[in-house]
Image (cartoon, rainbow, N blue to C red; front, side, top):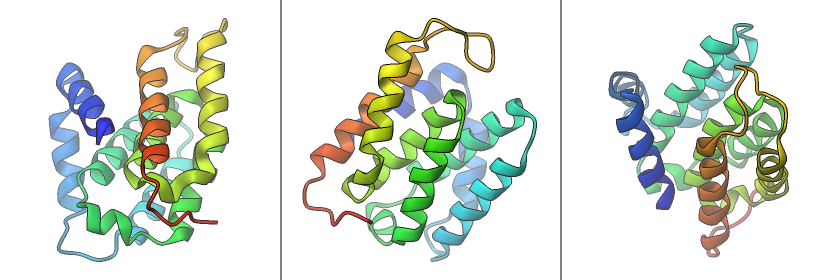
Length: 162
């Protein structure tokens, strides 16, 4: 998927291999409790008050989800997919970018996220106020939203979660 190329480029550029590798081990494909691990990761992230720590947690969780096999992604429950959609809608832009990556990996089952992804993309394109870290529109946010939208729209065979 296109999103994996975007993430791989970001990982190389940001030098976050150690974090990705650590979470990939936690979401090892030999275990079938991915739903629980993803939801626990989202819960922990939501309960964290420090935005920098939440940013790191979102990065690690996204790396773990991206490392899953297609068959494991297809077996995620609609409850987990819907939780990703609701977290995307509720989080600040610095966190949304990572949740968008996860939604893009889920693909067509995350069609419910398309309106929120499009709104976030438009907000980034017209943003004239800084984000939570004092930065203005970020190319990586726009790139992650576009990649997620593309992956979801191109996955026409997937059954949409409601």
